[in-house]
Image: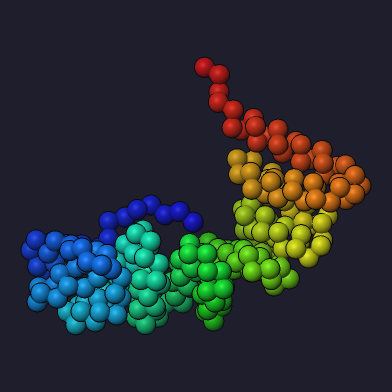
Length: 251
């Protein structure tokens, strides 16, 4: 869920523009703040005050949304996750496009995951399902991430359906296969789980998480492992493939 750091569209300026915060950022107990032309100092994570101030001066909703997204990114990158989520809520009051709204809910859920609040992440991702579903990257991630978060809460049966929905959108991506494996393992369906972990490990040999889950499953259930030598052999092949892919070329 990594994103490239981008310069926020709302930034301090020595020349007040009348529509964006101006002046040098001032530190206060809550963190970075913006100084408006009228002298108001507003903390970057005070989404209510910032939204009120910006909306009073910016009549273009698209420009206002861009500014709010920039402030939300700034909060996210500085670990002010409550502020980031609050800006997304403000954007949703302005946003009518279903795809853009779905992406807002995706971003909100990812913010919740960063603070390890998986119940809040489930709630955020679930809100997107009031919008028309699409077969695109946003909806792959909504389904996959919702499945992951449900797994984190031990709700493995519910997670399964969302992992399968993500796979249906893009079966070539390994992460939903891994999360489906976790869901199935949590339900005691070890053979199906092992197959999912193998599929994920084969799709992304450089990412050892799925292989780690598979090896843990085999270690914890020795009788199952003895009965399925083909899975043990496949796991060994995946481990060797991972070593090969990570080996530096000989010059």
